[in-house]
Amino acid sequence: NNANNANSNNVTSNNNSNGPSVQSARDYVASVKIALGPHSPEYRRFLNTLKGYRNRVISPQDVILRVSELFQGRNELKLGFNAFLPREFQIR
Image 1 (cartoon, rainbow, N blue to C red):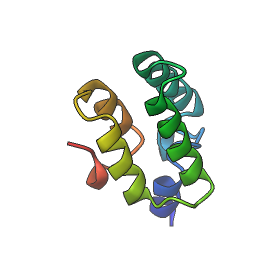
Image 2 (cartoon, rainbow, N blue to C red; image 1 turned 30 degrees about the horizontal axis):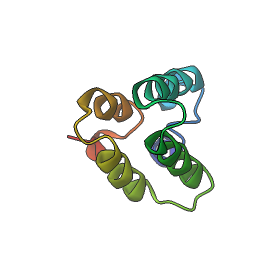
Image 3 (tube, rainbow, N blue to C red; image 1 turned 90 degrees about the horizontal axis):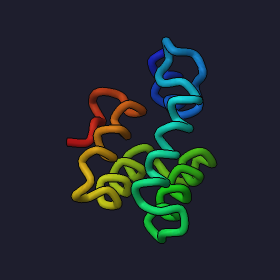
């Protein structure tokens, strides 16, 4: 059942066979912080979305929806987020 584990642990995995590394996730979050601004409401919403997912309060589908809306017009951020998603859930 490795496929399910890979899908649910993409952001926190440090095993390259299961998805991006923790360092890749940190680097991506840092790039979002720079792009949106460290004190912006958008950056805070992004962090809260990730926290909600990590705490299993927000479903993967809701994360994708929120990130798609939050990064509307910022294709580089959307495409970067895709690295953490299974192919069937990629943001277009």
